Length: 177
Image (cartoon, rainbow, N blue to C red):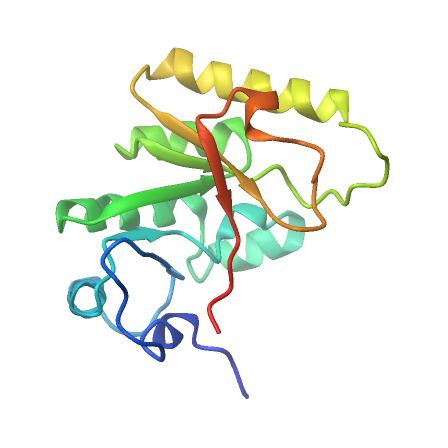
């Protein structure tokens, strides 16, 4: 059965310039974290993120993937381990529960994914902005020293900007050829 090996693909490109983050499938059942992190460092990566991520799993898919195991909590534990190896980390989250789990794992650079809601109107969706702002405020109340960025992707919530929701900045998807 063919499958895409996201983690191996990180090494199919030229070594990075020393400021790049690797989007890591942290629940990959093949290999060990220690050897994988050494390869990332040798390739020039300074940071890691849990992308692709289990944060988007819902319902039946969430239950099935948890048996692999693939959960946000396990991703956050993996990122915390990468920090202990000297990597910077960006922890993607989509809900208050996930954000709190990332903070509990000791992660302090978070990326809020606003969900997979396609933009259908010309103006900013006020309800979405208010709920994302509230989520960020609750996490900051829990831990003061946290940087929260907003994930931006073409075609999804383009009218929602980091400043609208009180985020510290934005992370934008950029595919590397």
